[in-house]
Image (spheres, rainbow, N blue to C red):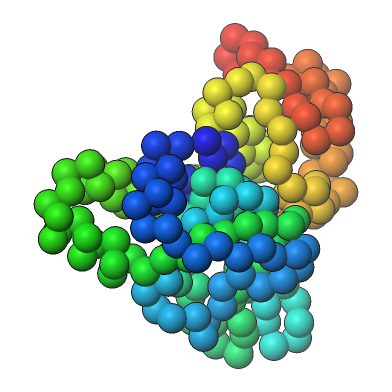
Length: 213
């Protein structure tokens, strides 16, 4: 199911939510806002199609990418931190379809129906939410550009289940996500290719494992 960033859920969970709750679906064009701070606090958004970004924008209009979501991504109101003098929002990077429901309704249904399957699926969601924060923190804690890149690529490798991964965003956005300069990012990718660590073709990267790496 979902193979890139954000809180991801399984195909089983996604089908269960869509069939059981019949949530409202809405299509978004590139650049349209999906969630922002004035959204109801119990909003839960399931990304059915497309790519979306979690961004912050300061009072000067400078924007930074904090996280990203693809099919199977779950977006919660609580992900939008209060930014003093700024704005936090979820925006469609590419055309998206999202399903909206209330997480209070989800929990109430689980308790009233004593739905053990849903309880297990919700536990999966909460575990995933915790792993999201830990994953991005781990990537950003790496002290070098190469360290950040390798941590990011190995995370994609785990999620996509393949030694060949597809970068889900333009390299300019990836540089923003990794908090590094784009030219430095591209230079490091070229070096890694030259050293035989990776094979790169556009946004598709094959990770080559060597002893000691």
